Image (tube, rainbow, N blue to C red; front, side, top):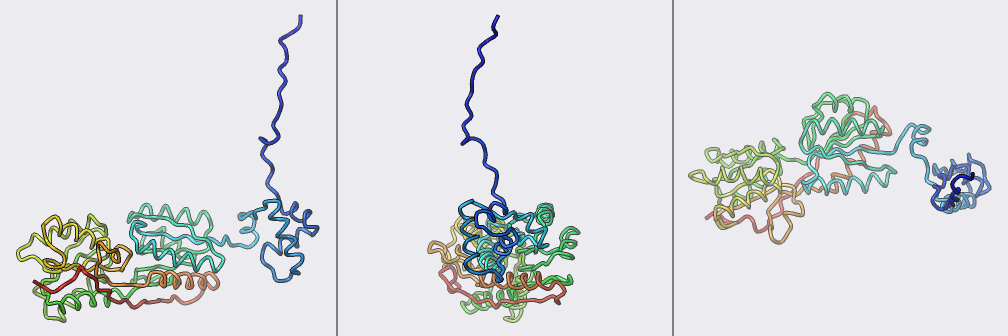
Length: 346
């Protein structure tokens, strides 16, 4: 008694995954040794142009991609940089990262980004992930290395901190804007327009508040000082502005800690039926694309974000090359960009 018929099956060879090409395959295709292929892939100058092109052509034909993990084990480097950002929704940080990435790419480094959202737990998690990937360096943007995890990481990983001035850690470089001077520029501008009741919404940069206080006292306006603390967000600016603008007497001008907070101030003014700048002048900080938009036209203190990104990349590359260097501070001079959101006091 015969059993059930045996079903024949065919195998589509196209469905079988092809093994990844190796350095040996490239060497065989190019007709050279594996060691010469390795030299070409590392960019060694000690290879003739004819053989270099033969190796590169073979790699392209085979679809060969170097094994980054294996290469990092040989070189002791990954050519990766971890950039930890306090708030990726803030246009300043995004625009800074453009300048940072451009310069890192020119130095043969690739950038990984982590967003902490102002949460210390997220900061620690992101840095731990960067360290697991064995990054060559760290850039902390708007984040002070105060937690145990971050402080330990900076002790053995080349690190640049951006936007935080009061860092006292050996071997940690700093790129910062002269916040105090920038705040004084904003206050001087508003005083020049006849404002006296000038309020400040303090966000993540205490040094900007310090500059505001110094400027107000220099103009003999200490009795008019008004400071409202807020989260460095649009909603934080709106809430703080509502608190300030419902005082009696209310301020005739508000200097916000950054452009995102200033947008919240504009929303609060609209809710209360106040015209900008006829009833209320508003100034921000960072001069992001928000400030420059035609609808907002916000007077804002400018700090060159791309230039700061390039400076951070340069400092980090130097630090990776020589970790024993003395810590350096690079300070950027701000300037005030005047737009329609500020006008003469009523």
